Image 1 (spheres, rainbow, N blue to C red):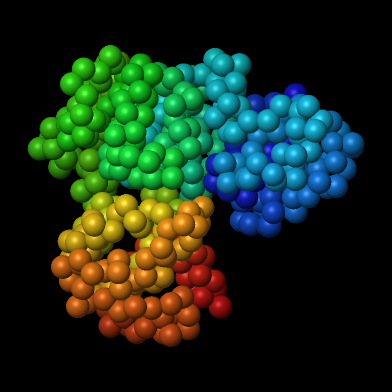
Image 2 (cartoon, rainbow, N blue to C red; image 1 turned 45 degrees about the vertical axis):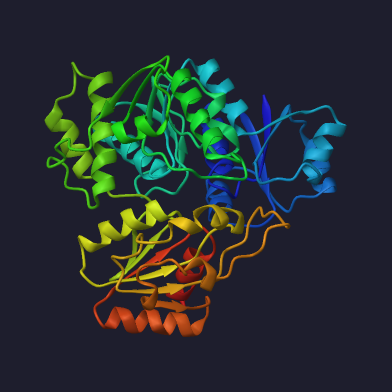
Length: 422
């Protein structure tokens, strides 16, 4: 089978193309622009076309016809490649449908990592542990890894570890054998218009799972007295002292990973082996990633994530400077009321305009002054832009022995890396 992957520059479709190739499928891909992911795919010998237009995909099809177009959720229905596929009767789907087919064909057991916060790091941690413990594993993680590819298929593996995102209701297309629920907060209002609809999706997902691991507070947040599923829900007072990873939330997620590993390999792996594997975890890209001395980058863009990452940073330094870029105006309308004490561990804050993506044109664009009006440490806020002045301020803060934490899911990380490389 020959498969065309549209949107391979992203962390969802790019790794999936690698996995399909490793699994024996004939693959070709495209994206609108070159990126680190497209360059990585090309370096591995895969065919990636830059630019997405009708004539280009027609030429690819004429050279070697493909049977399936797997596309990113970011593509609009009138994307030229999707138009071409529909006109030529070619099967199209998002990544979940193809991955489900792959799991079925290769007879793999699915281990899903879901939740509002911490999915990527926890998925990376689980993959790391399985590798360190010598267990063959196939996987897909929504970021770059220092210790392996973002996506991999191992023909000797029994399990497939997947970062199972709730956005676009992706997770509901799967029936995992095992599931970790890292945390629960309301998010993705463009997919779930109400908190109730968000929570109901997680209840459904847990009921589709064979066995789940979660924290008691998140189980209570489900507001569902009876769940037709097997699960373990742990009290927040569980002893986490065996884990040395920085950040309370990291140690909590490590605990869930340890419980899952014990359940699936209790007879062959000791608790000490699991503990050693977890504590040696090197982390993942853009999750409290160190860019330079006293300069860190993090993908977090929700008040709960901000508070958790600041707590992690305070374990390293008592003087934290937060540079924050809110993500999506539609999301800001939902989380605005939660910008109260989530940043109180920051000594000072540089607040940037919201990064706009997938927006509702009818919604008022909330400005930084509106978003910060309830902060308990509003006096510490400096309004800023991604420019040379901000970079100079960041360098000054670093020279003054402050830990600078860049947070946001938009352009802030790429901007900082570009400045670093000049």
